[in-house]
Image (cartoon, rainbow, N blue to C red; front, top):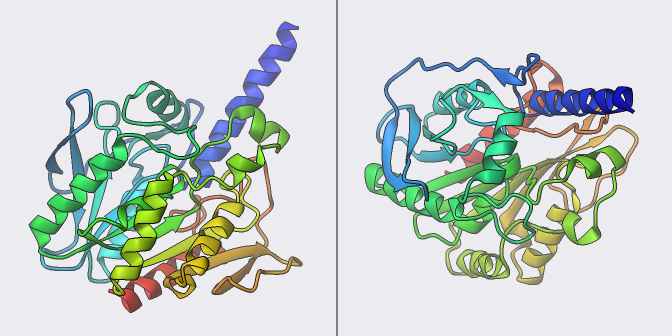
Length: 322
């Protein structure tokens, strides 16, 4: 029995390490990447967590450039997401990368084990709820307001993994002009669901936003034709079910807004794409318990064509929309 438990724990640790890799992070035996703190001091926001910690953002790019709020995935404000922010900033944007775990993580630090413990304990996060990510969403709404006041321009919000559905909630804000949803993973699967591949249908189709948030998003898109949404996804993602984009596309289509949701979907070679997908990318990534998953942040090996293509598509969308 003890041997079985040791093997089970070891297997779960391997899953956690692989998840780190799929979110664009390195992974060592403890599941943590070394922090990097190079560059200017972070911008300290007026917005605070429920426990009183101020949010901070790394600001990349030049003042006066169109602002982008780049949200990190579940493992934390990793070096990979900071590198992506720098890459986007070089295209002529000012990128704000907030640390959403300010009382536990430093910039450049990432750990799937540590972050899972944090979001379970924090009053700011509700990661297993089908209709709400928690108070952190309202904090991000205030942060977009601060960014608009600082820059004078409305903000584009990019969400990844755990924060993947957040742009859909924030698009109703007068301070937000666009949102990009990348593999929205909330509600997150349990370890058992990852192992078995079985998840309730309601959970697969849950967008991770409230009904009121979805209605507000649709209303905002109808009222302001300059507002837009985009989505990036692997069709065979085992963490973020593709059904969530199906639900969102249908809701927008029913409202006459199907052309306001631009999608970039990668599907395995030999499978048929759906007609409503805008950009259809074929890939040969092997499906595992936790992947393929991350799109624009990508795993360590960004030389693989599919990840380079995702980033190319991201830049094209930003250039076209902003």
